[in-house]
Image (cartoon, rainbow, N blue to C red; front, side, top):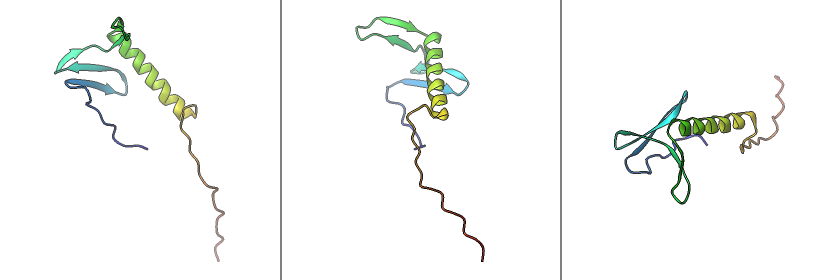
Length: 86
C-alpha cells in the first residue's frame, strides 16, 4: 500500500534523501556519517562509501520489485467479457 512512511525515530538525526543521490545524514543540524558497526562496536565502514552502498541496495531492491522479482504479489479476478450493445 502506498502512503506516508513514519520517520524521525532517532532524536536529533535526519536522513536526507533524493532519488538521484546517496543518502546523507545530519545530527542536530550538523553533518553526520552513516556507518556499518558490528554488534561489539567495531566500525567496519563509514561515510560516502556506506551511503553509496545503501543507495545501490535500495535501488536494486526497488528495480527487482518492478521486474517482479521482489515480494510483491498482485492478484486479480478474471476480466469479465464485454457486453454487446443492443
